[in-house]
Image 1 (tube, rainbow, N blue to C red):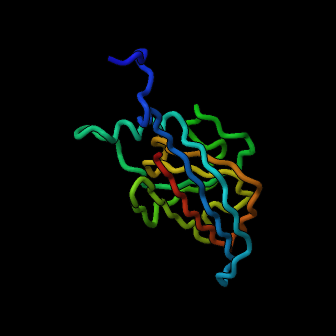
Image 2 (cartoon, rainbow, N blue to C red; image 1 turned 90 degrees about the horizontal axis):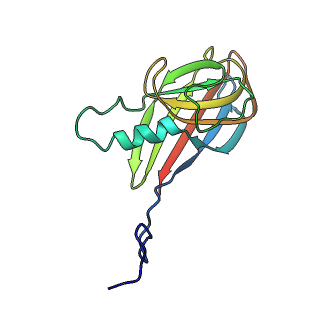
Length: 158
């Protein structure tokens, strides 16, 4: 018999599951030359965590994450967010892959899509609206009309 109190973890058992990650942004000019690169930490919002938990069911699963959006809001993302502050453009993911406890989402915003002062990004499960998984903000990336912007977003469950 042990003296542990109820709901206390036993030695060696981890009770918390964390969802964390980062995204890498690459801005290219019309000729494909890199104009800017940055790596930013990400926020997994409450509805995103709920989406992750719901994917553990065998039936009635919500749509998989399929799109990435960029926007121009300067508001700091918070866990209660359900949208971007001011969406400039949304594109389908070009790829997603799971490796161990990490998933990588990749999207490219071609010339003419999401043009402007980009300061936020998010991952969604629909072409419009839908559930947001992650939301992040960053210092401005000025995407010109002929520029393309690629984002590689890594999300780790630990």
